[in-house]
Length: 150
Image 1 (cartoon, rainbow, N blue to C red):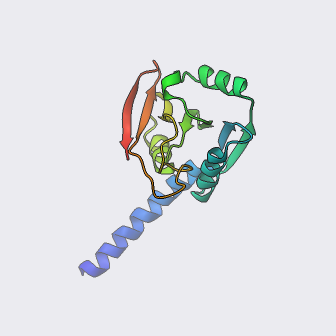
Image 2: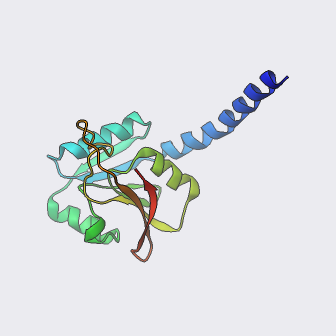
Image 3: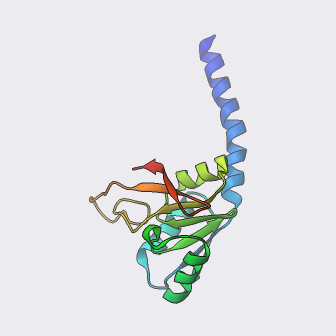
């Protein structure tokens, strides 16, 4: 009896969870980056491989700085590219699973940031070297708290 019940429950969970994930991934990701940044391109390809639709915008460094400033991102949490999805700002090499969690939980916040460009993060996984890093939840007042640790 348990062998029949468990797969049925699992199928129901997957059936109800899948539409929510599909809805989250249907929100387009718009990215602003330098035209020559290879790791930005790698993060965009990673996000596309995770099922997201991504629109990339090349911008001069002055424009990027203005976008980051207008988004409420202090210099100490900035990275090479800035994205927006469903009203949230995504700064740097944030993993797709954290973006999905953000969209699911819908906190009252600016968004998520991975400061700098840590080796091993999505788009910065160019070899065996991996750094520990944190994904930060950027609150509306500009303060941060740890959202996830890797």
